[in-house]
Each structure stands twice: as C-alpha cells, then as structure tokens.
Image (cartoon, rainbow, N blue to C red; front, side, top):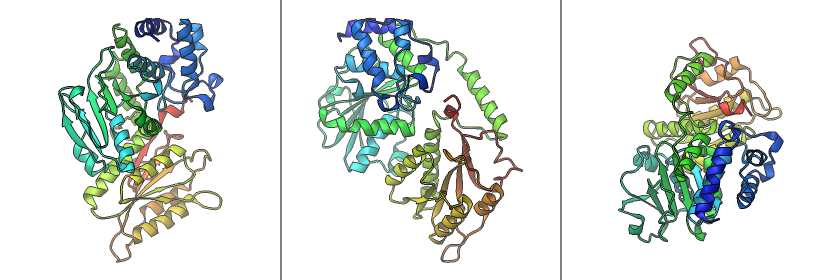
Amino acid sequence: MEVNKMLAYITKVITNMPQDWLNLTTHRLDIYNEEMAKVQFLDQFVQLAKEGNSSTAALSNLPTAYDYIRLGHPLSCVLEWVIGNINGLPAEQVISFQSKTAPILAILRKNLLAHRKTLITYTKELPSAFDIDVLKNIYGFSFDLKKVDSPADVESFNGSTIFISQQHENSAISVSSHIDFYVNMYEELGSVLLINGADNIHYISDIQHFRRRETVAMTPHNCLNALLSLVQLPAENSVTKNTTEHKAAVLDLIREVSGSETTPLVASSGLSVQYAILMGLVHDALENHKGKAIKIVVPPNCYGGTNDQARRVAACGDAIEIVDLLVDGDNDMVQSIDHVLEQIAAQDAIPYIIAEIPTNPRVEVPDLQKLRAVLSAKRKTDTGSQAINSVFILDQTFCPNVHFLGDSDVLSSVRTISFASGSKFPS
C-alpha cells in the first residue's frame, strides 16, 4: 500500500479502534482460533485496509491476534505492519518489544548456539541496561562493538551485524546491505526490530520465541503512542499520567496479598521474571561458587514455558544442566526432590528447583510440612563436606494469597524466591 494512503488509513483506525485493543491483555475466546492466531488477525486487517474500511464494527469483528501480550496483540500487529510498509518489508520481518535490549539478546542467543559471530554497531550511546560484562561473562554471549556515525558507515562483517538507532520519524530507515538487523529504540516505549535480507528470514521464529519466553511485545498503550508518532499526532497520555501512583499501589497490594515486607520486583510477565530469577541465580553461582556445576531442577510435565525456558538457559552455559524432577503417576514431588537433592549434593553441585504450587495443569499440592523438611535438610558431598543448600523457585500463580515466606510461614527456613503471574487471572 502506498505510504501516505496507509498512514491516512491508520489515522482513522486509531480514531475508531475498539477499546479492547488498548485495555484487554488476553484473548477473547469467542473470536480466537489458536491454529491461526499468528496470521488471521493481520490477514483480515490488511483486507480492511485495502477496502478502506476503518469502522469500529469492522475492527471489532477481527479475530484475536494472540493469546497473551507476550506473543503480541492487535496494536503490535498493526504497528509492525505499518513500519514494514514504510520500509518495504513484510510484517513478519518487523517485531516489536517492550524491552530495548531483548531483540539484541534474542539474536545473540541464536548466534551463540549457531556458533556465529555478531557485530553490534551503534550511534551515540548503547542502552543503559546493556551490561557488556554480564552479557559476555554470565549469559555467555560473544560479540564485538563498533560505534559509527550512520548506517552508511557499517562495513561488511563475517557474521551477523546489528545496528542500533534512535530514529523515530515515519520516513524509511536507511538500512545498508551490510546490516542484518536494525534495532530502533523508542524513548520510553521499547524497541522495534527489522530483519533485513532473505538470508536472515530463518531468524524470525527464534526471535519470536525469545519474545514469547523471555519478555513481551511492546504494550498496547506504547504501540498506540508509537503509531500516533508515525502519523504525527500527539501522544496519548491518559494511561500514563498516574503511573507513579499506580505502581506504588501495586507494590502495596502485592505486600498485602503475599504477607511479605520485602519490596516486590515487577516484570512484564511471569516468564520474564522467572528468566530474571534464573539468570540472577546463575550470576550468583558463577561469582560465588566458581567451578561448580549448576543444576536446574524442573518437573518435565510442568508448564511448557517454564520447561522450555530452563532448557534454553542450560543450552547457553557449559556449567548448567537440567535435572528432571519426576512428579507424575506414582512419583511424589517431596520424595523426588529428596532423591534429586541427594544426588546433586554428592556431586557438590548447586541446585536450583523450579516448582509450581498448585501444579499446572494437574492442580496438585505437595505435603508442605514434608516439603519444608526435605528442602531444609543438611546434606553432604561425596568428600564429606557441607553441600550447598538449594534455592526453591516457587511459582505460586494459582495461590498468590497463600503465605509461604513470612517469619512463621511454612517455607520460612528455606531459601525461596516466590513469584506469580498476574496475566493468568483475567484469562
């Protein structure tokens, strides 16, 4: 579609869009076809654009884009389509992120596993959250850095080249043939990744998977503001004007519900905070227990995202290994933890246990007194020295008001990090 015509259409879409596009963070089952969820919305939206139909009724009848904002939503799909059109790229080669660093990490992880070199080029400064030392020494990523004046200065490189920019205009991005991935940082909004060249199409599924498992798409409100910027309209501030007060209220409510006085950390999704927990523990182990193996203990039948994420973390580090925690059939969680921890203690390794209470989808709860006893037990290595205590990573999404961690609560004597995903409740 011709760019000016497309932007005029998008201006009407913004005016007429259903409020669900901005306020609903999970899927409507009445218009959700899981097998077609990644393509059906955009296919039908593009047809409306060709017809010039921007009525609220027509937009409301479009099928749901995805099932959670981790995977995307109507406004992220529209934003990616618009940016793709401006730059002559198919929408699937444009991926939005709430995070500024996540698209870079997604490429670095794929290249780490593919043993492919990466050059990161940038103008001005790197994002403040881009910690070079942590990414190289803890995440295990390998890359070179080069500051340039413009994309035209990026030279040929034997590997993947990433270019980071702060450009926000609705003009086409000047992408050199030497640039494989263009990361456009939006101040306060997130980032948009453009995948350049037919040779890089195979990256799309892995980058989308990284977004699904480790972060979220740019949020609906931020996508709206990005679209408003592209059509040169003022930003929508109604949602953000009370952000400070809302965040403080959320933290107070979490403390009230959980019964904990600890300051909570809030992330973009349950899986993103779980990723932060895992990588934080890996960081601690590599710094404070040098040379020891790291064992991530996870039930093979627990939530698929948890299992997949843990295995991808392990794949990136030679010192990290997955240990299956058998809880199916005749296997009891407490007995299985006891058995696994004895084995890990004998090896003088570091145990990190990820468990759901209740389990999803079986909705089982272990004997909590026995669980505390097993997790608190002192164990010995094969050489007779004191084994390293486990850290219990507790996903209590389906019982966030149960008090596990207070001074008088059941896991008070256990090294535990607890988290819950709020996105499950409206779903």
